[in-house]
Every structure is written in structure tokens, then in C-alpha cells.
Length: 328
Image (cartoon, rainbow, N blue to C red; front, side):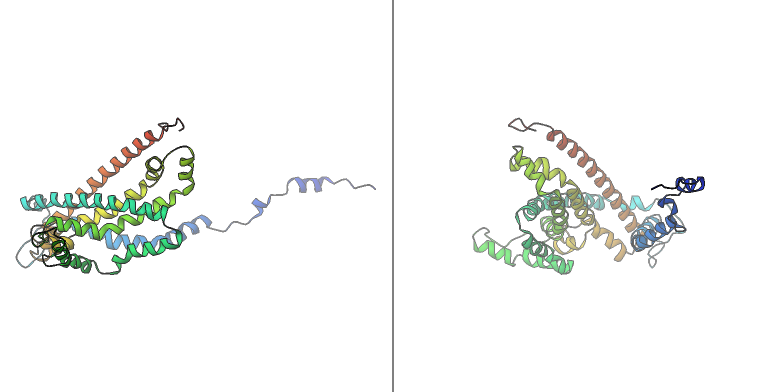
């Protein structure tokens, strides 16, 4: 049975047939449609950041160069100058500012010390069936108002409150508990109020590290402490950073806890700023104080990131050291 030879035209049509990829019609403006589609999806986020963060911060910075013209006007901006910044840097502001940094730093460290073992236990030891209940219990304080939670600690720490009566009943105190309206009370309040913000990112980071890596570390001869320091903790560092930022930044501007639990002796910078805006009606000085607080917070956060990179470098160096049995 003979077959006909292909004609030259048939050969040309066979060899010159375009591929499916070139035959597929391209949608007009495909890349631009994807770009504008993604932009449309992100528009609510950008709009929220613009109207509730960027514009307010820009106004605060702008008002910090203004002045208070008379008793009945909060701020005027027809003559801009740096004169409000020396006014803001009073002796009381400087002392309160450093006290605020101390409370914020100690509060963040205490939250990290408490949250890290709890998040580790929650991610490693608790079964998935009970984990949701434990996370719900962590979030229970956020179901109530921030002020209500702080007022609850005011009742708890009062001289005739539950804690004072309980400690006196056990013989731990000879008299009433004298801790309310002190910086110690403020420290307790901020740790309680901001602790869940540290637990959640730590839990997510430790849980995402994976059980297989820990099991591999055990198989290579590492103990629980070595596995935690060389495997779990380095992989949880993003959660540590996120938790510290979520606690430290809002804690710097917190004035509700200081007002309710600290009184006059436990004041923070947030109280001074609120007093300038609400009581003294001097928005220029209050804005200058706020700008100083923002800049100081950025500096501390930058130092924290530098220490984080240093810690990661040290952890990586320690990770290259052989284990006790000689296996890496």
C-alpha cells in the first residue's frame, strides 16, 4: 500500500504551523487589568492607612510648629517655628518620658518572659482539639472594654480589695496593701492588658516551625533545651519581634492605665500629651510632645531590630557548634 508524498505546500504548512502558545489570543490590557485589579483590592487598606494614620500624624507634626495665640484658641499655624519643642522638653516631661520608656521596656520584657513558655506549651503540648479553647481563653480579656479591665485591677489592688485582704489573711502582710497609685501598679496593669498581644504571634511562630524539625533535632542527639535554643527559638524570632512591637509601641502612648492605676505618682507621657490637648488646650505643645514620643519610639524600635540581627547571628554561630556527642 503506497502513500502519497506530501506536496511542498503541505510541508510548508506543517513546518510553519504556529504553536498553541502563539495561537492563544491575548486579552487586551491583561497586565494593566491585573495591576488595577490588585490595586482595587488593596484600596480599602491604603485608604484606612491614609485617613486614620498618615493624615493624623502629618497634622500632629504640622501643629507642633504652631503656637497658642490666646486663651480661647487651641492652636494657630500662621507663624511656624520650632519654639514649642523647647517648651515641651520641660523637666517634668523629661522625667516622665524616661519613666515611660522604663515602664514600656520592662512591660515588654515581662510580657515576653510570660508569653514565651505559655505559647510554647500551647503550640507543642496542647492537643489541636483543646487548642481553640485555650486561644479563646487568651482572648477573653479583649471581649471587655480596656477601661473596664483596668478598673478591675484598681479594685483588685486597692488597700481594702481582694488581694490585700487575701494576703493579710495568709499572714503575708501586717497591714493593707499599699501598691495602688504607684508605678508598680502601672507595671502590673500594662502587663495584664498587653500580654495577649505577645502570646498570639509567638504561638503562631512556634506552631509554624513544625514538629518534624524538632524530631530531627532529637534524632541527631540534641536534648529539649538544645532543640529549643537552636531550632524552636530561632524560627520563632519573627513572632518575638512582632509581639514586642505590638506591645511596646501602644504601651508607650498608653495613658488610661497610668491614669487609673498610677495617679499622680505613676504618670506616663500619654497623660501629659492628653492634658495638653484636653485640659490646657495647648495643641502645639501637645503635638510637640507627641512628635518627640514618636521619634523616640522609632529609635528604640530600630535598636531592637539591630539587637535582633545580632541575636540571629549569634544563634546561627551557635547552631554551627557540634553537639556533645560529636554530631552536628
